[in-house]
Length: 192
Image (cartoon, rainbow, N blue to C red; front, side, top):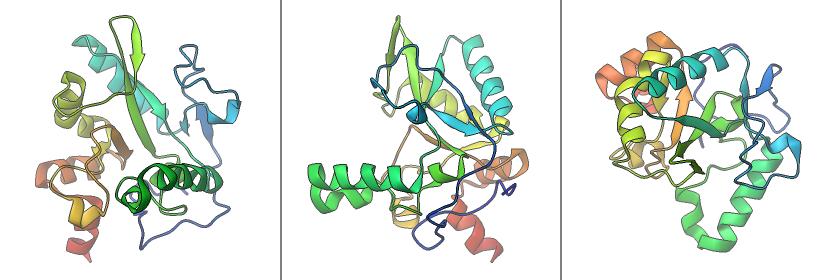
């Protein structure tokens, strides 16, 4: 699948066995703040997307911000585990914050959750108003990424605001979505 603009959500599911062919590990987790024991859980994205992220990371570093990929590709089976764990913790509220298996953009290898390296510590506690979040909101489109679940668009995306979740859609579409303040769902509805 080369299509960076694919819409993946509750209405547009990926098959259970879909796995991108060109996944690469983006971080060997030398920080290992998640304590991964299974190497397949290391952050991975599609190889053709990695240069765009690295350029974005490089430009963020120029202004003193160290962003990294906390989570990338997730298999259908792993997304099931994530959802089930969240259901145990949050009950039905889990469905507002965690995508259903097959409905997760992480399965495409095009979606990333960001974390920071700040003051010598890695953290995935990404909050609205963080300087990294603000920089990404204003600059990610220049590298082909969009904030996938923006504040105020929850009724459209059916996912709560996630200031850490970015999706690669390519340079042209990212610019269009940023300029027009559209989600992928709105874009597809509009271009219908």
